[in-house]
Image (cartoon, rainbow, N blue to C red; front, top):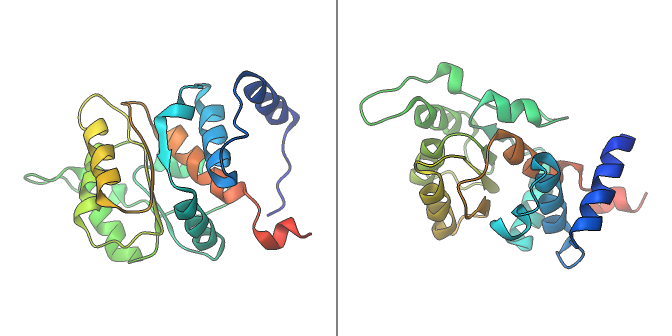
Length: 195
């Protein structure tokens, strides 16, 4: 991927690294941590995020070989650059015991099947619904924000054993969820590193 990095972003990363040493993180973990911090200007994400480098490596490979990317809301999709996303919220309907966000996840699962990367930054109920499905994801970026259900849904994601990026606190949101995916998207593949 040929990506021209704007000088403002270069300076932002320089300042981030001057305030926080991220050199101890493995490469993809570091990329995710730094991009999430960059998106929120919140250094606390360095200790709040939870992920596994081996899971990120598999997700990175899947992403760069064309695995679908599903988002819970259009705002997450708008933040993911250079990649088409699937968002079914516009087609979804709430029903008894089912939020519109949860229904959208069902619709997306029917559309994409196994092996997708799921990026949830808004609705805890979307993440909760994903955990009830046999989605067999390449990765779940579960970073919904809020005081109701966000912490619990992210804890359930970690307990599920699925490959995931999550965080412990109520923090999250569309921008940080998109940033986590973009970190994997922008990180070079081994073929690009040889160029």
